[in-house]
Amino acid sequence: MRSTAVAHPNIALVKYWGKRNVEYNIPAAGSLSVTLQGLETETHVEFDESLAHDELKLDGDPVGSGRMLDRVEDFLGLVRGYAGTTAHARVETRNNFPTGAGLASSASGFAALTVAACDAAGLDLPRREMSALARRGSGSAARSIFGGYVEMKPGEADDGSDAVAMQIAEADHWDLRCFVGVTAEGKKKVGSTEGMMHTERSSPYYEAWIDQVPRDIETARQAVRTRDFDELAEVAESSCLQMHASAIAAEPGIIYWNGATVELMKAVREQRESGLPMFFTVDAGPHVKVFCPKDHEDDVSSWLADRDDVMDVYEAVPGPGAHLVE
Ligand code: PMV
Image (cartoon, rainbow, N blue to C red; front, side, top):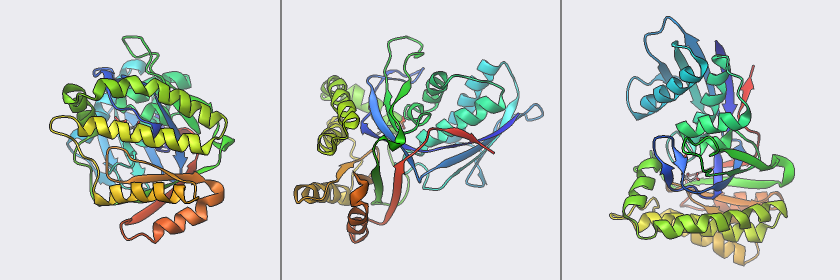
């Protein structure tokens, strides 16, 4: 009853921002992402009948209370329900990048937990069902079950059984590079669930945002299929800005950016206009993710490293879905 899994975060090129069902954590619209190797979470799960409650260690430190432990316990409860066991679990998880800082640790975290916990509980679920289960932990985790280029479907079923991700292209279909430009220290202030729900409740732009997503997914899917970098650049930046615009227009508005985020977004566009192909995307935090074709990775990497407003850079490449190790 013991297993270890590795999962990678993913970065959405067409963003997920809004839920149609909170209890089952079902997205209000689809999304499209790339799973990224270079950043990773490794999670070990062991079910043990003698434990009185679930235990969690993050990066070697016991987590005795708080939101993260609650989410892990709720998730393990679902796995216990599927597997028909009452045993509690010992979970040890490690990230090779900062947790909870807007670098998509919840995506790799819950994807790795899904694969390790299912295996440790003796559950042999198809990938599609694992994706639906991972979604209950974190919406974006449903996408990290798969590698390469991934589309998340909002589905129609009330229980979310068809709100699952699917791979649209293998990791080696298109050799893009992703650089994460870290622009601030510390954890994000408004979590994504809280931010989405506040946006839905109070932003006059929320419905327009949700209406736009299917068109952007169509464009991005086509751009991935044909490896059209300019087209992908345009739709990814526009999806990112529209997601943030909907959040900024909430009452009170949610601003995830800092000054460096804005400077960097503008600088990426200037570089692209002057011939260096790159585009940005930003999630529920201040960091800027910069994508470029492999041929330009050295130029983009040194350009980012030279900037005073970028504190740290992580590099990642399209990679595999969540998988067991050992
Ligand atoms: O998976 P969650 O609930 O942490 O939400 C992710 C939200 C964004 O990262 C901002 C967008 C996305 O599609 O990943």
